[in-house]
Image (cartoon, rainbow, N blue to C red; front, side, top):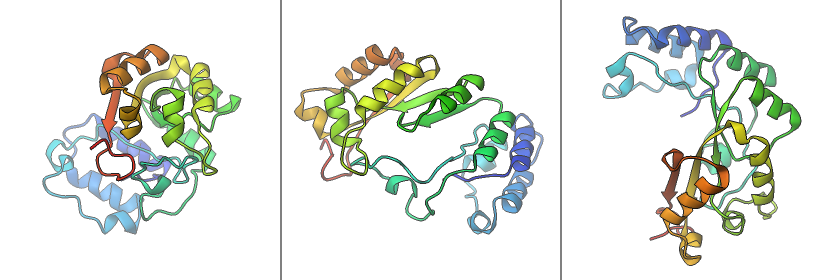
Length: 216
């Protein structure tokens, strides 16, 4: 699950990152106090990694719950994850997080970009994991805008602008690839060659639970 946290909470969490001496109870108390009643009502399972490592190794911040695409295999209800309200993080808050986080990585569909956003990515040296499903004709069958049009042209254009920051790729393998005689191996090779990303940094996941897009 993804949560928006205040800057002072992010700073406290950062302090806990490299301290194995800090107790799990301190972090849980911080989460309860800063993240509100909604998360406070959800106990952390005793078997979870929180209780085992006592060290926060990764913090994910969701900057929007209002996705600009309508991917046909989406499991996240187009950003709201079956319960959250649609909305975007305040830009000022986003900058505060960037100023306080140690390592900065982002996951993006490469659609909503401007010169200003590209400048911020360059300034903070944000490493990007991009979502691309292969050749444009395949990508456009499944990663579409609300009006039904494909997003490939814009994605490939923005990929050229952000080439230096692209560090990894996430792809979804569907029946469309199968019908086009593109194997998982073929897909990973295409993405590696096209975006100059090492194959070890490319994750291609087959769809199995969607009746329309499933490869099974």
